[in-house]
Length: 264
Ligand code: SAM
Image 1 (tube, helix red, strand yellow):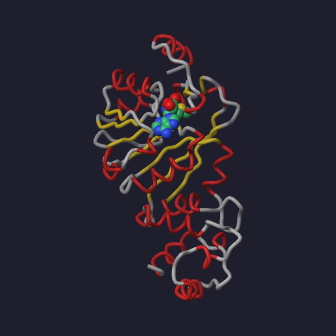
Image 2 (cartoon, helix red, strand yellow):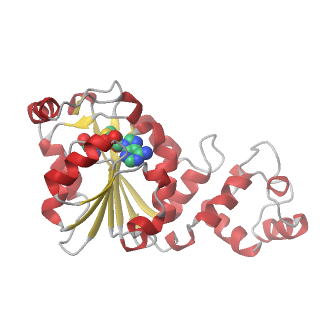
Image 3 (cartoon, protein in one colour):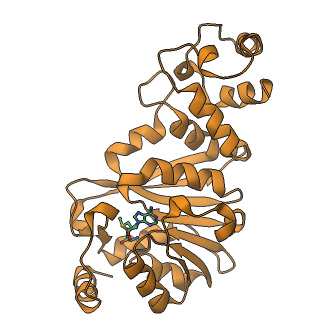
């Protein structure tokens, strides 16, 4: 769908985009096609889209698979998407939808032009819920990408960058200027893909809670943040080449797997 299609559609269904839901709709058909191509969808794939909006990506996704589930917070849009594309639509805030309600462990491919105000919780939920997803193709604000790709020892390094790193291969694909959206945001966005790798299996709610505790107070030693036996944590840190004073941000993503398993 191009700009004129999006504007016509908003008029037809009497819809005014809401900033509070991050409603900036893609209006460049060529780019929407490239984003969907990055997913490498086969007809038998179960595909999930978070926030379909007016269907810029949904209209193409629906031609690639007959098993498409969309989760949309805005009831007016959810109703429109269900009628226009006949896919399975859950009209709710994604963050409140239990994994079982959308058969999360069966999803093969996930796509989202992520509403920026909830980027971190949405990515955390996608990575903990989708136990068997092969690829995620996502759009985020370009400046937020640093938080996803942050390296140990940096300010941005934390639970989000650790689970992204452990999930597998991340490829930054291309940037999108505000003129590709209606209404146009002031920021640039980036499209990236995440392909499942060998360490993805560790990511679940329990592992994420462990990481969140580890980073609860960045200035404290890790042994003081974790509510686990201090001697056990210290012994594990030493066996991994760290020491009793090590802070959360000094530990690599791979070593977090060993620390988690070693202190269970
Ligand atoms: N996918 C469409 C596109 O690319 O044009 C719309 C993208 S727009 C940036 C974000 C969409 O996510 C909007 O349709 C908005 O209503 C929806 N949304 C916002 N917060 C949401 C949430 N917590 N759960 C589900 N959908 C949400």
